[in-house]
Length: 88
Image (cartoon, rainbow, N blue to C red; front, side, top):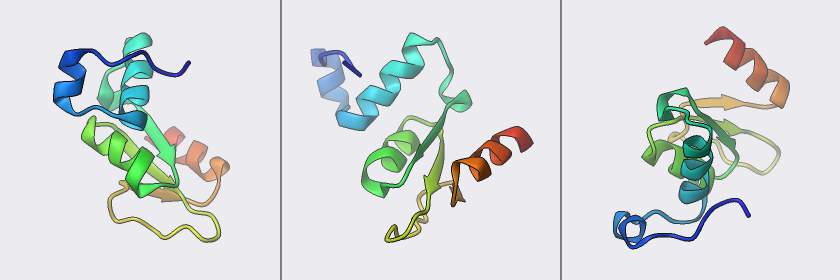
């Protein structure tokens, strides 16, 4: 399972789906939000979740994916993403 069941407190914060899953992974590995890179193609899912949690967001652009202004970075391949991380 990727995430645990929501507590009443988490429900009151409005944490859902991807946001809760990503938050749980960072918490499990004791990683500050500013150190986490969230990569995905969906503005509504991964990008939105990462932004709301204060994490770096990277949209991977593939055919049919519209470039989102909400992502902090954009890449067209995982190799390009690795280069981005190494430069940071």
